[in-house]
Image (cartoon, rainbow, N blue to C red; front, side):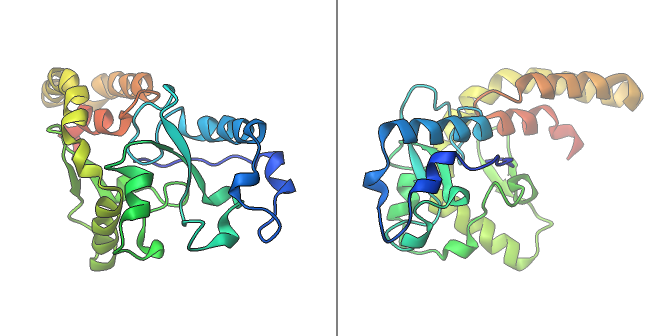
Length: 209
């Protein structure tokens, strides 16, 4: 999970109104238009776990469940693209009974990296510097989206970068920052579009923590 920059709402959403239509009225063409904007925001990755969503195994996700808050059904800021995993992300959140929606970290409004540290073994750690309320919200978010279940998937991706991270660490110990920092930034830019990019980023820059 990482910070997302939301663009303008798709024009098609303006023709749908809570009380007059429901989500089943949204046409396939309009859903395709919504997906174009979601993919522009998320880079064809799940908004929560960052898995590749270009394979079509995805759904348009209501951050606040439309059954619980129908007024948010066509609210652009309530829509994300989620993977279709039953055990994590949007589908898991909608079946998870023990959370307040206000507690969830919303990635287009807050920076999840402020709350979470992705460790090179695939785990997600809650940052120690958080105050009690932010720590609680981080815990609720991890449980609601069940992001821990993807530990092995993340590890399979990031382990290919561990040696590179060690090389950056050696460079940082031996050379001034102006010598290695541009190389690190170049590599972070190169991986920014990849699935699980935040886990890769935190692995490459782990020596800075």
